[in-house]
Length: 320
Length: 275
Image 1 (tube, rainbow over the protein chains, first blue to last red):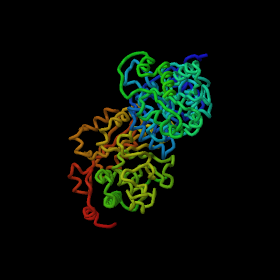
Image 2: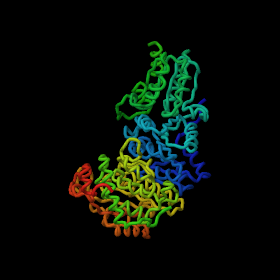
Image 3: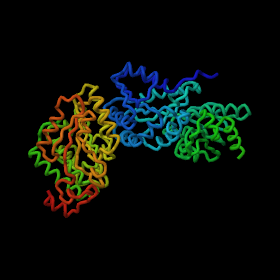
Image 4: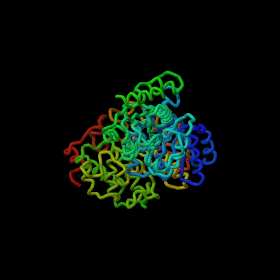
């Protein structure tokens, strides 16, 4: 039974708005990017809301200055711009500086992967996971649904440090109940068949596709464990490898370039050596820009990322 | 908290002493950028000894301090002897600049008591300072944020994003001090990307602007104070006209002085040997 579709940004921003009423040290910055919920923040908390304009470098630097003076800062913009236009600012003033000066800054980017499917490569975030993962002291949070995004908003406000939260722009149903604090702490959550010999490890939008692949394979008699990766920088990889220990066939799925330092790199470095009996395959986007316009699922399918193609890939992996 | 004149010599004598100290540091640590550090000696001297910057060496992050962001970080080796003299750290540490185990690197980092931010990667100070100034203003604080930049640093686009936004926010607690020494790394700034007319540009961006000889400590202190205390309802800039490599003729005349290293013999000749 699918839940109603909701936008991650609305769920995330609603938590921030609700807490701004009682917590006077939360400051919201936007890079001229809005939402209906944000209209309420701007109206109700004008003393702690600023639109810095279309200037992501300044967005990050101003966020840093506010954070150094004690504010918990949310900085909000379109995903590729808040990660790549200002990578130097994130590196210098958040990654490096936060190592010696405590701060709480949350970069919120909307438009994960192919979210903006008709806007082309400029507005698509296909490198953001890898680039943010490359920076020490930056968390990389990738929710798959609005319930998770809301839980992450609370966690961001309650946890000192710096993190990038990668939100999808499309309304999506919830994958399941909101993640528990323990699941958020571990950085992943499980569904499907625990102890199965086949596992799908996915993040963000592709966790919805993974659920469909799992259902198809299980309908054919193959039990599958699905792992929704929520934290791509600091997940508990010891716990994850314990969970994956019975698996002999593991297929990873991400809506970003593969082989460039994204989620596949996290697993290859920390899980593959600990699971020597497992066979691995990695699904993602080949490092190449696409200018084709089309529905998101069609863009993904063109690169072998569809329910049927991935189910076949798992069978192929098992038979390899 | 310290803000008043608390020194035995005149500002001019102090600046001369810190210039010599800077040269000696460079002699033992030739990796340091001496030319851009020499142009700013009087700026740092005025801030710390002219009663312009409230600071607390016993508690460098004292909330009651004024915030100083040294955005042209590599050009602030001359601040090391000043911070040591003020008591932020032991003067003995000055003999260890760039040596293994010290916190005094060739480009200063915020592990050094007295430094607020990561510096040296240029163009960040104005934006971070803008964020600090917004916070202080909204918290009702009367503390100021001072950002020292070089003129070459103004080539960075992020600086202008910050200048626009600071004016929009009417940050009358934000002071931009431009060490206008006329040179970036490879040439005279005017030959690379000319900033002129810089005062007009800054005014057009909504800033009040003062200009002063950056090596005349009395005029510099007076100008900085006048700018800080003016009733202008927005951010203010003080353009200090300086000479890159000031006090070392071999540097003053060299458009490539940013990457020029003085020999120990040249330094000894300029400083008259050991202090």
